[in-house]
Image 1: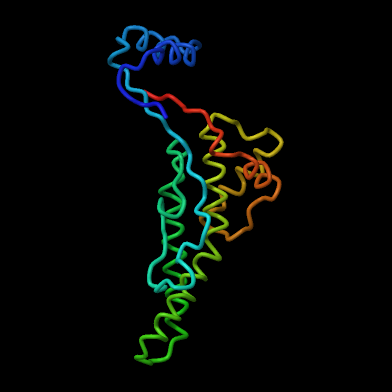
Image 2 (image 1 turned 135 degrees about the horizontal axis):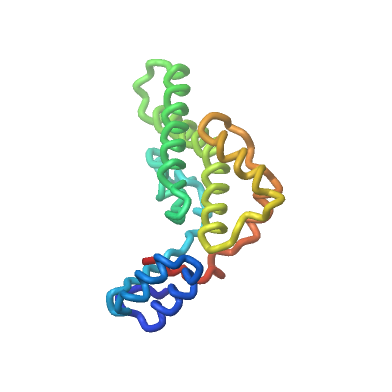
Length: 188
């Protein structure tokens, strides 16, 4: 992808994007093109396999935050989703600790961690991937269709409090978006 300092055509593209914002237009107009840095921001596809491995893995490692669901910075949901994921992981560990007996068997501990990570992933992965897909969709310059905006906003407002399933009508839209087909987005 593109990205760099002083790329040809970046200034004209930016001027076209901000033509209705006089103050910003004037600042960009006065800035020499060689001083404008274009940053290419692209979404990332969801992790296709289990966050904590599978057969043959130790079961002692899982993915969290950007390692599990990297997002566009535009909406600020990456850090928020990572915090919710960390909370879900802590709850999974806490719940397992109340059920574990005092055995020192290392193999049992590995099995327990696999169950803890599976529980965390079962709870958090659908939410994390949904937010990641929405972030990719909106971050690529697309707007959430008006007929779905209320459902989307309501779900996001309850994201930290409720473990609600993702809205199927919105999930269907964002699942159709292919991050490999996105165009680069220029930012200052």
